[in-house]
Length: 377
Image (tube, rainbow, N blue to C red; front, side, top):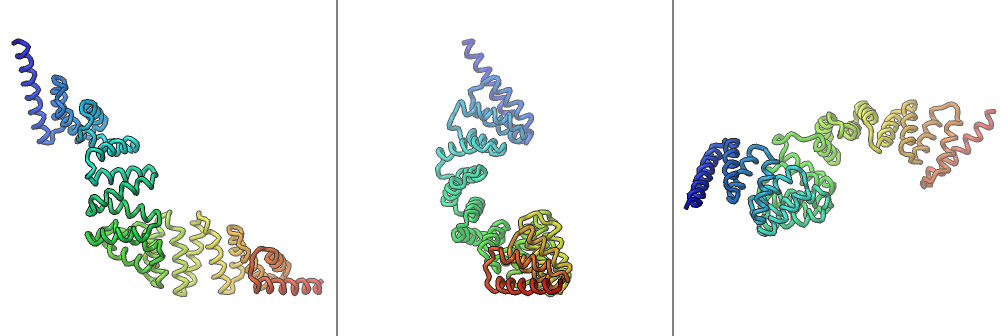
């Protein structure tokens, strides 16, 4: 009889503490709620609902280690408890503990095979792990289960785009844009897809749809600027490429493409300025291209004094044999000492460059310069 009275008193205390904790939780006073849930658990560790609510209160407080410990205890008492599995999956995902995140979302998929969200989460985690084949599989399942989930659709289209499966990616993106035509991310992904397919009109269209609703990052300014160059809209290209200059990651290419746009508008001074800036910013393998084009513009203006050093630098960085031919011709015109041109002609003749007219011209000019030098001694 006494034992029953003790148990009854314990149950009464637990219920009372739990009720107070629930009230604090409802009032969003999670710290007090958690304290009372712990007090209740100290008196009765068999009530699974106390672990659930204590863990959720800890999550609300941002106390992930404590929440994790509570949900692990709950899982040990009930291995198929969905609340425990879902919260542990979330915690490990936030901690970027990818293997454990995958483990718990897989458990959830087994328990609820019709929940597209869990497949999407697996797709995201496998993608972060660099396991693209598995990521594609889970994103595809997520999309099949819930085609209206634009987050799954976006993730799948991005993966397909990275794998260059353009037709399938575009089809998904069109379906997404039918549901939400002004969706910023979907329009940007579609623009990127069209850009990679060299469909520059479409690239510009999809970016312009959201322009004004979204501050374009420099990489998209650069992409849009390049697209406008390809469709001969040079003023618009200049507008967007100028904005891309502010970022170190896009500065070099923005300057180069600005040079292309300004040259198309016959503004040679601006074109030369931006080519020089591309050289100054150059960290990529394209530095030879910038020197080459700057040399070409100076040569076009018959400014061989400036052209020759850039041809030399272009050859130094790229070793394209045709540059030896350009150097030979420029030196032939600029230097009184014809030995300089002769050296470049001979080096070009020995190069693997295959262009009969250039080789014939170089051979004839080299012979003429050799004769000229011989007679001038």
